[in-house]
Image (cartoon, rainbow, N blue to C red; front, side, top):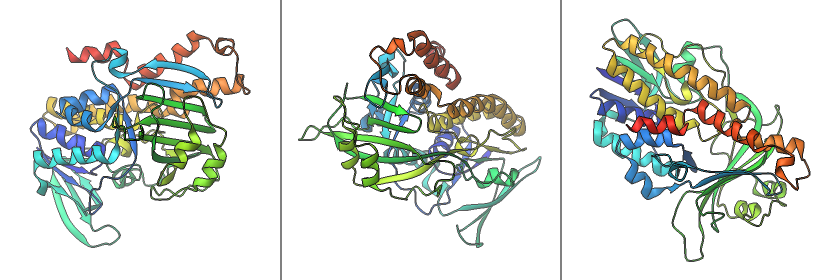
Length: 414
């Protein structure tokens, strides 16, 4: 069976590796002329790391990343709201892992090229259209920004892993329009800074309108005792704010420093971390409404093309990796490709729909919003504001919805 994958992001490359391992013929087509080691940090949950481990990538990932020891939520005054161990430190078989997105992409790209052959990773191929029949699928590619057709390709299955602005998705939902803007702008950067808390902690402070997230993405500490820290600063600008969707758009560092000038805690100095960044990029936090259907005969969607969601709970890229596993399993278990894509959709669509909707409610981060609403000036005793049972319930429910409840996940190793 010949499978065409449109898009060479994390989801597309993981799917290519997974399908090749299962014995399928795989061809990847990427719109960009070059796949580069771009981006900032990214965090993966244990269920995604399980999939990458089964693909033989764990050792390389551990060399470039940091095993998350704990997740901590704080209010804007730096007061602790919730703290829990993560990954192996919480008893999972697999770690929760923070890495540089670009470094991860290079690991995936090398693995895919080694598996399917470099000549089967086609860059500079922008999808113009695709057509499915009962017998085959056909795709036409152009040079991006032009109408110059450079390839007609036929196969048995086509997977649209081409992101939030997916050409494949738009073909089936032409009236959907642009992604839905949350009113919040994400500011992302990386800085060298002093290790905080355990030295491998992920922290989130503030509330939905103003939030600061930080976690290390390298275990290496330089001669000054600093390590590389990935950080995100969220600011609400309102529904009518500037929503230009360009990851290369740089942010105003001075404005950001002004907004977070008082966020100097005993355990972390947010202004110092922000000021240490060589570059800061801004992007609107956006998603799309869940779809009623992903699969259309021999064509289906995967990752952000299928279920773009707010970057809450480390689930965006993690869910794309889970898509790859389930899609591969469905194709292995069904000799009929159309039935396989239908099965994949029926498993993954309701799961990811639940996460999209939960992330619109801020997922597990809603504990920060609850505390901000009930104690806007801070608190003396946290449990006068929110009970431990309420905190534990929110954390447990999100793990269940997102598919990384510990006992259920660990059982998959048996």
